[in-house]
Image 1 (spheres, rainbow, N blue to C red):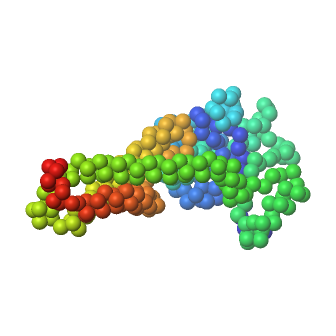
Image 2 (cartoon, rainbow, N blue to C red; image 1 turned 90 degrees about the vertical axis):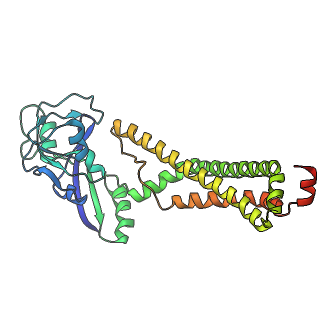
Image 3 (cartoon, rainbow, N blue to C red; image 1 turned 30 degrees about the horizontal axis):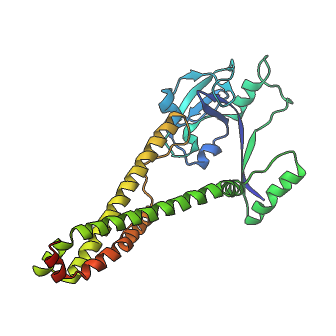
Length: 302
């Protein structure tokens, strides 16, 4: 039922970045390539992810000691790692990892007195499993949880469970967004209706100068569309700007980066919905402009 398995040894960190004991198959899984140096071949050799190298300024030949835990505040080990390589940027989690061999993790966690002897119990923290078939994806986790001391965690299942937990909050945000859209449409309607009342005399003059009712109707519709489009573009720009600020803060906290420079095709639907709201809000003022009483308006002088 298992097509591929990648064992990992975890537990330490360096300056807030996880130290991961793994074989070469782990960086190969992320299609990671070397930017400098080589992959680790001996115990106590380490390869830095792109972000780790950039933020720490460390390169091939640098030495460092790992610390207990992942917060970077634990006691440091006596044994020091030697950096032998730096990876290119991948945009994945491996950019924020320090890679070494599993034997290195065993060595630094062995009791004082040197290297582990043959027969000593050696463990790994987690095994990444690629299933051989869809049936294995359904059966293997249940068998592991039922028949062993291990715990199986399926990323797809855990992600779905997380969305079920936060689903109520997401739906509340969507409902709030819908209310904001309706409020925006009402604002456009009020603005156009007020502008129509203030410019009724001007519209009547335009009719006397040859403007057709259809032209006035199109003019009011165009105003509504321009207002809606301007609001949509401004909103998208502000959203991406705030995402960029959030991304800078997360990056400073050594968390997964968020970019405000990435534009999704789905965002076009936001502009489309905004234009639809603007068009609907402009229909009534445009219809009133279409049916402007030219003689009555001019006789009243405005």
